[in-house]
Image 1 (cartoon, helix red, strand yellow):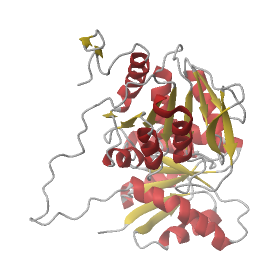
Image 2 (cartoon, one colour):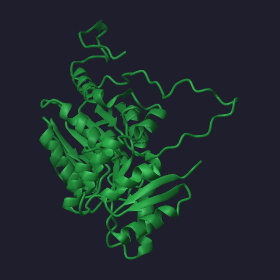
Image 3 (tube, one colour):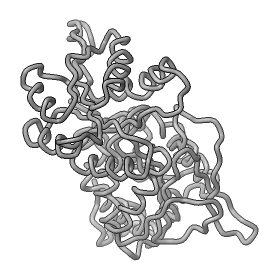
Image 4 (tube, helix red, strand yellow):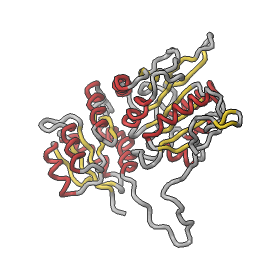
Length: 376
């Protein structure tokens, strides 16, 4: 199988060199070319036909954002990973890039101590994202192999709990900011439950993400902070570099807690940590949702939610940037429904409200047909 061909775009000679060396160390990746600015990059793409572009956010002349916009116009399906700084401006511009169609981002290492440590950090963060976004089809199965019956798993929506939903918990990663920007604005202002969210992002980025989403949504969106009281119609995003959990206070009210325990699934915040906590605190009264994302974070937490009697929805493969997290939850048989992104908010609202009407999902009240539309 040929290596994944990368075009590295950065105005810094040092960054181009370090990035190129870090990527070239992996036999499955080839740095096909480098470019010092956006114009050169746009000229090289039709010449080298890269599988993926790494693009510096801030460059003189044609900026990374302007270059990305042109790439999306000419090559709408070419994966682009933004290379940004861990600063307020870097966070803001990176979120602009994601909204314009960037596939993902990586923050530039700072204060790592040595060039080798910088290379190691780039390899650890960037290479998995490259491979996740440039998935190659496996070789054809031999004739005796079990034939494929479907392009993707088919799961009939089912309702495994008749408990009243008291909390919505969402986990997402790669592609998550845009997925959240589709789901959250469609939740009604009178949503009768609080919402807690883990989006894999570093510090600063989560605050900017919360601020942006808050302007787009009927419900309130905030970055979580220790001790905040959970309230219906408000969503909290776990702050970068902190696990977020929920605990019942002396007054029997639920409040947010933060910790810097070791990363789980190489992530902090981690979806598993949040889901485990909400399953422990709310038992069967949880609706978990796993959206697009790379890796397996959320699988064990979904097991906890299901074991406690709660429900789990996942985004489908066709609308996910990477069907890693939701796909693994589905493959483990933990999904009550697999849904296109455009249908997730409707399903959330329908399940939350139906659970409060005493319905046996999807449309029967004590054995009698109800006016609620069935999902079967």
